[in-house]
Image (cartoon, rainbow, N blue to C red):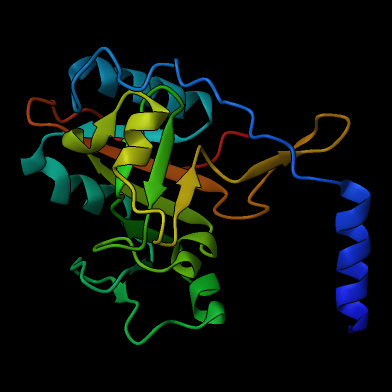
Length: 213
């Protein structure tokens, strides 16, 4: 018997037989009151995102290109491979961390979004890119299409593949110390800018793209 086997044997002996599995209640809501992309969900998602200090803009599909051009005017923008944006720096070959730190913003799509929690999910799929691309630049511009928005967390999780590299975003990266002093940009972008695209949205004014905190 090896030393490792001896240690594990002592632990198992001390713990005794495995306890019976405790049943977990599953009576919580798994489906929201609204269908994906419902106007009520888009309003709720926008409200949650603003509460997290994200900047939110809404536009119709036909106005998306112009909206993104206005939002990123004068910026050096990085985009994931597979996403074509005039003048942007493509992440192919993969940009170094130093290069990513030198761009003004990254522009991506998303896999899905949850209105109840204001959470955006990225899974590294088409138009989303690798994790470093969305964590190093100081600004993240994320495009969410109406049909990607669901109401509850269970609905969000059902749309995601757990084997993919998932990133869940609820507002700009932020943390608070014991005295509740908020610091943004600690573990990711300091500024989150979200563009919600829906078929009947008017072309509203461009909102501030700077962090408010």
